Amino acid sequence: MHWGAPIYLNFLLLIPALIIFFIIVSIRKNRAIGVFGNKALMEKLSLSKSAAKEKTKRILIIIGAIFLILALARPQIGTRLAMTKRSGVDVLIAIDTSTSMMAQDIKPNRLEKAKLEVASLIDKLKGDRVGILTFAGNSFVQCPLTLDYNAAKMFLSIVETGMMPKPGTAIGDAIERAAKSFVKKQRKHKVLVLLTDGEDHEQDPVKAAKEAKKEGIRIYTIGIGSKHGEPIPIMDESGNVSGYKKDSSGEVVMSRLDDETLQRIAFITDGKYYNATPGEFELDSIYDEIQGMEKKELSSRLFMQYEERFQYFLGIALALLCIELVIGDRKRT
Image 1 (cartoon, rainbow, N blue to C red):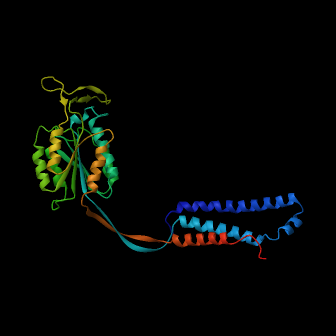
Image 2: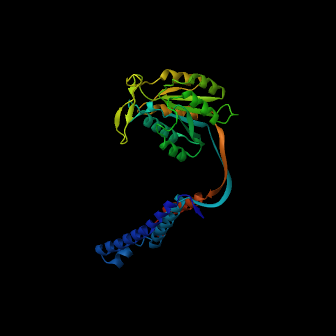
């Protein structure tokens, strides 16, 4: 026999306490009879009471309680083969790791905010494959598409600026790399979530988005940062700000959110653009969009399933308790 919820078997430890309770009640009853008068006389005066029926009722309650506890523990007897299928869509998440993502217009900085958003999105997914791509001046698939969400979050935890050998923000290259990471022959079930400040001075991300559209990829963009601009801090070995990035003329470089480009990328691929918010409401919207998409079968597995038999134990428990209610405590006249 197998138990589906064995933790409830611990309640069987309460049965001895129930038995002791009935014994104490019986002892106190006898003592009370003695207080009111002669015990033999009082028993004669209460001949209508049936001691046997009273004992039977208590036994039925105890046995009924045992079967009720066993039913809660979900006894399982016998097995059968069952097939489980997992369906969903492929969700690739691209994270900008350029130095501009260290700007602190969103605390503690843009990159940490992006990582927090990605972790929250992974926690929401159910049955969808997820992968992580990092990019700066070039791009790299950090975690291939997988159903192992813990593995994806492990790869996410080590994402940081300076991971990519080439500096910059090549959004177009990230989109092209993402397109190659999906199954080529499929023209649907593909989602790219792009988290960046949108500053691409090297390529044409809109052109890359048009090519992605042909591959059936839907892109959701999340803008991280502010439009008015924020200086890019330079961190020392202790992790403290030691200065700010400057251009060749000695002016402090201001990193601004380019939400216009991100909106165009999303619009071209039938996706949507969202600005990162403290409450992460954009994640709920993206998740709802993903759940509304057509699913594909991602995996199937044959497994042994136990047959639930708690119904029989529950039926016995209820029958015993009903009998206890029907049995009176008076002798037949």
